[in-house]
Image (tube, rainbow, N blue to C red):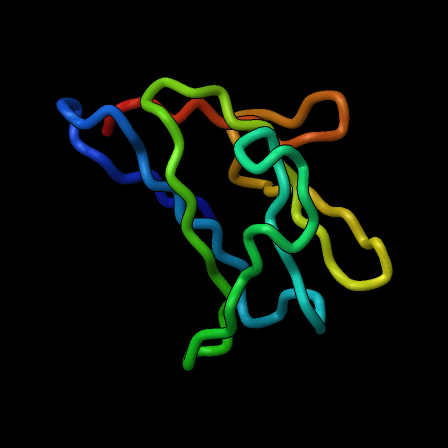
Length: 96
C-alpha cells in the first residue's frame, strides 16, 4: 500500500510504504532513488496490527523509483505503484 501526503503549497511530499500482515517474513526495507538504492536505509517497522510500514520525504513532483528488499536478497515490487518499469516500481509524488 502507498499513501502520499502533502499540501499543494509544500515543497515536499511524504510517502508511506506499507505491507499487509501476510507480508514476507523477516526484515524488509524500501530502497530507491530517494535513498541512493541503499539497502536498510528505510526499514519497515512492524505495527501492532501486524502490518509493516515506513515513511520517506521527497521533493514535490519527484518521480520515485523503488523496490522492497526482504531477507535473502528477495526483491519485490509494489502493486499499487503508478507503473512498474525496468525492475522498479514507479510513482509520481504529486500534490494531493
